[in-house]
Image (cartoon, rainbow, N blue to C red):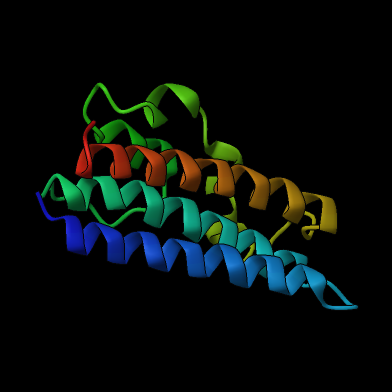
Length: 132
């Protein structure tokens, strides 16, 4: 188990969440970028589990694929069975496309979901590091 490196990944996830929220506090909210940071935060939180377990993972931003690499028994697998609405922001938020630009409500929804994923992972890692 690699607890220090998993904690490092979680710290990066927290930083991405904080950055996304800061972008929404601007008088002219940066919704598109906040959505990207939300996706990144969830990705890093999920990968923190794999780092903790010393499980290699492919280079991918597909959150459902990353979540599916986590072994059975981790709550995040059941509490967040569909993360496609966050995965889209890995690319859609970074490049012009036919998809409509993100608006503030998209960013708030994405950040709330990413925060929930982060909290789930952080709590369970803490439990596994400090069993009762």
